[in-house]
Length: 113
Length: 110
Image (cartoon, rainbow over all chains, first blue to last red; front, top):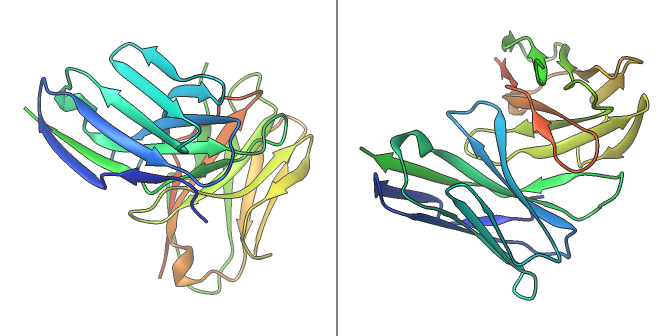
């Protein structure tokens, strides 16, 4: 079963604009990760935020985590056409050495040049 | 560092056949996980191998089995293929937290 639910399912913006994607999950987690996938290929790890963190930055990416609402958001600033991809949030509820990711269905982001 | 590699890239099988997919983990990684991703869906966890043993398993039937070798590489076997097994199969390796994914094997069952 899929724990995370991304919102929106699809997002279309112009180059230079910011893109915000949201993720909600159901159970307590140890950490939450965001991945990018281009055209049905392998997943690329973007950022990991631990359950005791509220915000994290990496380059043009900003991730927030609200454990009380069981939700996270991914903000991509100054988007580029190369950012066009599907974005997934994944939660780890097991922690430690028993590491298993549960993915949502993803948000398809299209950045128009 | 070659990263996670998977073979083959694409595979076409018919219903009832058996298939073996292969994965070589990133250098230094000792844990391999397998995921199935149907079209338009997120990846679903199949199982995870550590120290040559299945450590965790998702909600997949016994037709799905695997193996991990002493060099940490891994195989995913699927028996009695069904049309619904058509998907992208992803392998991920890890050592602690972050999982690194391979490019996947696209399996089509006709």
